[in-house]
Length: 221
Image 1 (tube, rainbow, N blue to C red):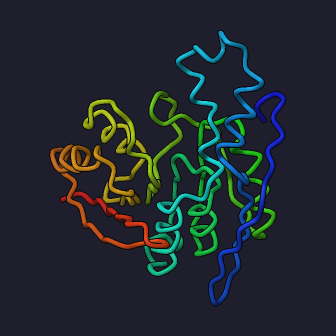
Image 2 (cartoon, rainbow, N blue to C red):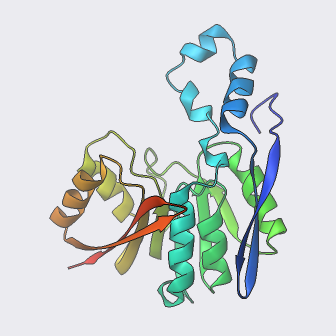
Image 3 (cartoon, helix red, strand yellow):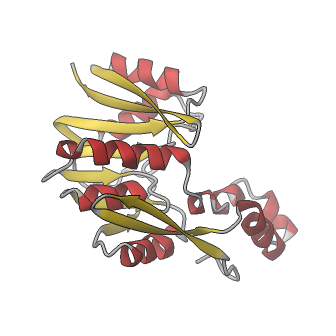
């Protein structure tokens, strides 16, 4: 974990007819950010990479919940498939995909994600692999997967085509990319970039606790 930070947490239960997921989350995001800032020197606060330590991963965001719900309603998308989750955070979609019969690799770059992810695996009685991984920056080869999933990962300000090509590195020929997004301004540029690379999208609107969420399913034309 980030040195000197002891997050105050709480538990959230997500109940389905045949499974209960128990997720340990950060109790209050602002409180956690204040705690991290108190531990940092003034020079550290000026570091452009300091924001990377912000514990946004520790919240159960509506996009992650929407993606998990969609997987539960469409289990054949992942059953007996290899699945990669990018920017997994607390790991809810990875836990759901594992429960539905997928072989999952959950990934994130924040140094504290692994602590929470492994605890959530234990809380929910699920075994799932995890690897620290920065998909936007690295050229590391972690292989290709039948299904690549992510929730609210399209906030990147880079050229949309670069982000799209970064995602396509991980999907097998004929595979599926499945994303959940709250409707960020960057989303349409990304969809256009995927179309230019030969991928058609299926857009499925949904909602989580009155929050609009868009599920995007990309497959090769």
